[in-house]
Amino acid sequence: MAKALDRPRTCARRLSSRRDFITAAGAWAFSVFSKNMLGDVGHPVQEKTARTAGTNSGKPKRRPRPNVLFIAVDDLRPCFGTYGGSALAPNLDRLASESRVFTRHYVQSAVCGPSRCSLLTGKRVNSWDCWGSQRKLNAGPLYPVSFAHLFRRNGYRTVCIGKISHLPGGVMDTEQKIHQVPFSWDLSYAPAGPWRTPWRAFFSYDKAQAYNKVIRMEKDEPRLPYESADVPDAGYADGLNAQEAIRQLRDLKTRGGPFLLAVGFYKPHLPFNAPKRYWDFYQRQEIPLARNAQPPRNVDPAISLHNSFEVTTHYHWPSGPGQISEEEALTLRHGYFACVSYVDAQIGKVLDELKRLELDQNTVVVLWSDHGWHLGEHGMFGKQTNFEVATRSPLFIKVPGIAQPGLRTHSLVETVDLYPTLAELCRLPPPNDLAGTSLVPLIRDPKHSGKEHAFSFHGRGPLMGRAIRTNRHRLVYWTNKAGEAVQVELYDHRNDPGENVNVAADHPETARKLIRQLRKFPMQ
Image (tube, rainbow, N blue to C red; front, top):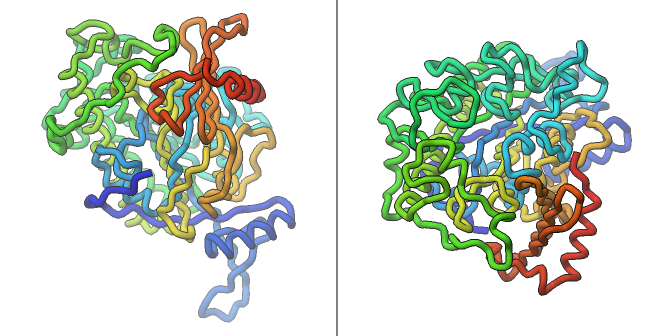
């Protein structure tokens, strides 16, 4: 992987974390781990105690559990300096230099709702809203419905801003009173500003306008899927999300006690609307087009591909559905990169405030995106495929005392691994049936072997595509409603990192082996 580019960066912040094993044996193991690898950052339930310096009381001082700042970025592919890309994101690059960087992080599904359900539940969930039955309960069930629920019932103040679950604000109603994820948040909302409702803010345009054809919301006149108004950062909704995150950090500092603050930024999700100065970061003629703009060989495009419907049918698109010229492709790539730089600046403001408030020394920071995004690869613009470019996304975890911060790990990891990781870092007992595994061994040692497979899924009409990623291969197994195979795709990343040639017919035994592995990991 390419090293981070040398660009001006604002300061991101140093953090802390500790873990609490339930058993004495677990406590001993983690104390050794903390001492040898992460410094004095891990303390189990039966904690080591530190005596207060300069006093004669001799009373032990119990160390508090760490806070968590969880930053979610919608539709962000690994296209900036840390990953060798050309998008300008100095704050993300700086955060990466102080974190453990996961270069091969795979989401469970390359679409917002299922990816976020899987994140919050720690399971491979094929649903846009998996909490319908729990919302009918009068009291929280014994089994936590999300990792935020686990944190909340263990004494954390939990605050959600923007988009963490699929619905902006994490709310079911325009009044922002009904939480999508029940029992999980002390406070969950999205600042709507002049756009009045969370969904309108999510699809915000200049002058309090909003548009998306398929979302049930009050719409203004049809708009192109990009805009570059000469406005301040708060002229679009992510500027408000940053302001609210800063306000909540100040409140949490005043309250004291551990907190989980989850901030979900909207960009670079469509529409590609960002203040003009972020568009001006880029010279149009220097923006490269995708090098593999053709469909892969040996696949049925009707199964594996789509017609860029989110761009060309959800917004005003003069060329018509599925039609994107080279000039329009340049405009879309320009808009996407501008939105990456815009959201990067908002994230920088939040990290600066974390430092200013001196909360950074006891706060774990996670940067995660719900999936990648095609920017012309295989002739598509959008997510909702089973290709590498859609299922791979950025992931950083910043823990203070980490040995050799900024080092990358190339081990395979999945979104479902984040739930057990956060529980371990914060010394909380996770449920015993989570689908993922803790990433603490990789935070400790980036050369740790990790897992052998990562899994994802996404359907197309009546068909379901399920993918397995190994160190060398990606296999996508398509079935109909009867469970019958209709297409098998196999890509050899050693020889074809762009996934341009399906070699399943040439390597049937490899395909059969991976299909057997895939069947061991069902969706829920």
